[in-house]
Image 1 (cartoon, rainbow, N blue to C red):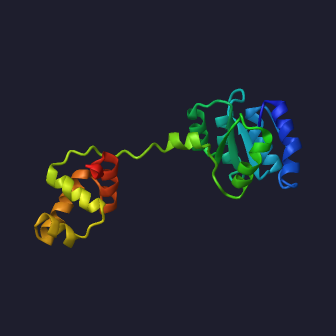
Image 2: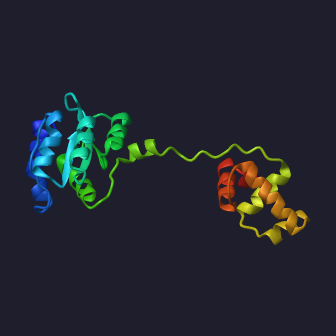
Image 3: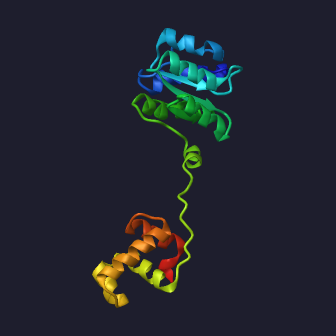
Length: 202
């Protein structure tokens, strides 16, 4: 569903050739309001929806297609780099999002992947949707830092007890308290915090 005839024509010409006949354009429209009825009528495997079609717009078209023909896989497209419309389309039921800046021949692999059951998103959008892990700030005394360095080095409870001149039971108690303070659930996560905070290089 696209209101740019040249783009649609490019897909019509290239998809059958580059996919060895597996993919072809069976219908198109620039009318978002008619998109769901068109898809319901021709039952394609996949519907490609331009999010910037005139009112009611591409997101509404995605939602309507999802309601009327839930088995059809829907891919949203946009020429805009802003992630908001892509997120709206995914919430409306799209299985993937592709930038409109792609050449028609560059769309083949992601479209075939979506037909095979995968979800496809550009890396930039994925980074927006999945922000980097936030580690808690580390404010530890010297004994806690020493313990954390030993944990990060993979030292056993016995070895740590010998190094700190305390009992194994005390090491377990200290470790449990340290994990709580770092707001992590295990030693591996504690080691990640240590690396992020620069404790290991001290």
